[in-house]
Image (cartoon, rainbow, N blue to C red; front, side):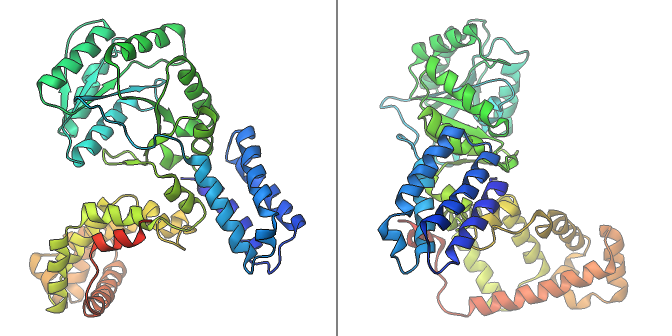
Length: 442
């Protein structure tokens, strides 16, 4: 996400940061390039002008010009203004005093409302809540059946009720969620190919009837400024409280994310970062600004690791390393856990200094081949790699659809990883993931 814009703006700031002395002329020249980067990223023109105006006003002041590190100071200003651009009031999800907390999802067809309902339900479930999903879409064929399928895939409760009145269906879903003891109700409303009076009138009646804690607009980030315009139109007709941007992983420009909050005044609350049911995350403006500027996002990386790796498992792994019992079976298990954290390119983008890695340098297929090689080994071979002579390596290469050279390379990497991990495990007390997270929080 933001790849094109991020690379462009990082290049401009890198040049300015390398200058020992900044002048008003050099700042203006750099900001002209930033303006082009914003417009190429499909950012709203007025939003781009306002952003650059604020940066310029602060950047040409005495505080920056007389600073010992004016380039670094300028980067800090750009980061703060990016955070301000992305931050809106009411960033956190609201809850009702009396359950269930009702969330109404709205938007145009094709934006991913139904899939997002399932992802949001799963996210709430992981946080310890008991959500229920319900569809009030009486127009699109099999809409309610599709939501039920999505709910089953995520082991979520879904209310399947007959009827053709969306308002009555919405009211019935609130009653059913309360009776079932659910503390969240996610209502998937009807979408249209374009905004029309009937859609808005129907949505307004549903919102009026259920009085939701949140009315969340689901927007396709890849539609760029069309997503911003449609969100603004929905907000005018039905008061939105938050926005969920889907397909942000496929939007290399990022214009929608950088514009929609400013244009509508409505905060971005969640972003979809992939096709998996787990690829929905809360939106943090400060973390996103850091990632855009190449500063990484260590806190999000730690949180992802916390949800994948258990503290007890880490201690067990350390014990194996100390005893020299780390096998290829363990190596395979660790690869699987890293993959569960998400797309490797996205993970690399959270590590400071690694945002510029190209897609070709992060080869997901190579990892798939690595897994195939290890799975082609017998249990005995995985636990005792020294048994792998030439004939065994040829058999493994044939069974995994790879080459002997790739098998040899894997074994070399395994030995290196084992050696490095053993050195790390003996380097003193290992900080827990929780302590790392606390250190990076502000």
